[in-house]
Image (cartoon, rainbow, N blue to C red):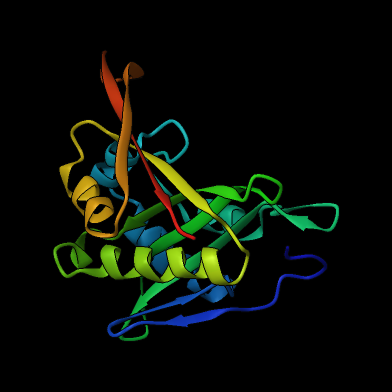
Length: 183
């Protein structure tokens, strides 16, 4: 279990680097990437709105990620060649049942390059090796085939469908639920 101050992690892949050092100097680049209506729609815009500003990025960077001495969230900036490319993180970390939610988004100019797949692999291994998680889970809106492909490529399985659970653009969408057991 991670307690006290969360140390800074740098996870290195072949083409992707993850860092949980959410420096203010990256806020502008993250805001520029996130300020995309397609990303907001793919994630589900209730919690990730458009337009997305530098102030929104700073609020994300400085949000509370601990309850007392236990961390319930760990977020990483995804870098490609030293340039911010998106965000991946773990939240709702449950140290008793050893499970947490994984979520990610990638700036559109980095799509179709394997960035999300490599970042998900790194954070999945981090969850198992560093914080002893057994189960990672997430949901994907039914039209987001690219994100589903990333999850399946990384050993996540479909566990079910929440039919008509998300209201957006005047209609309901279903959420496909994925999970991976990582022991």
